[in-house]
Image 1: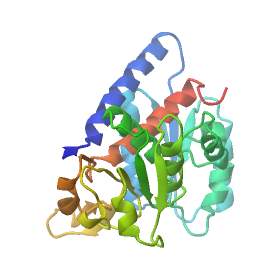
Image 2 (image 1 turned 90 degrees about the vertical axis):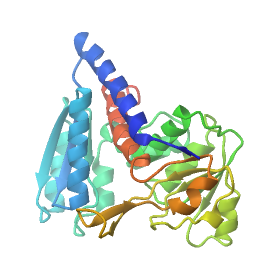
Image 3 (image 1 turned 120 degrees about the vertical axis):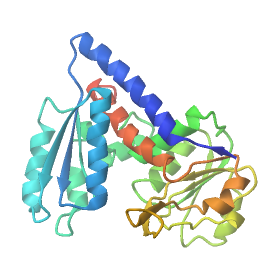
Length: 291
């Protein structure tokens, strides 16, 4: 078993980004600028946005945080989105999800200028990705592809099972794995898939993004498979100071020893999700997706 160290790879990529930003600024270019809109005080969102701001500092980006209480109106939030859309100093921005129930997440996503949609959620970016045009790809799938590349994991002709069909991870992941640069044969499985254990056991590469802690057991994975665990569920624990523990979608104790490679939780996909947002912002600053 080889552990896929997402934290190590993310650190390497941040150093690469920082070096490139230093050259851009030295040559008289504009400092890349990423902004985040945070609504309310959800613990997970607060932590994630704080990490994003820290990441920006590490690579030499300018960052901005726009805060609203959870009683902000949809109209007020959309007005701010439109302001950021036309801010020439801003290369990209994200609206941290989830949003309060009285605000339509889809309406907010569709209001973002696709050229600044560094989360890769806008339908235009999703559509461009599907047909193979340059696009901003959502951060988690982007990060997973980068991990597979940097660990030199063979993907061409391999059977890949993506467990989960969300618009943020499962669906874009299945598209990326089937594209010519990766060349895997992809099956999308989910909670309603018949013979799910058998389907998963056929996978050379299993990407677990179903959102159920420790769902993937040892009997669902074949010997020598590559397993990517996307799960990040906080569960109560009396073994940590915080009273919580982060668990993945894979029961590591059963699955780990059967794998050729496996990404742990935490420390696997999570750091790559964060660094992928920086990569998208740098692409935007360099005008490499949209001219």
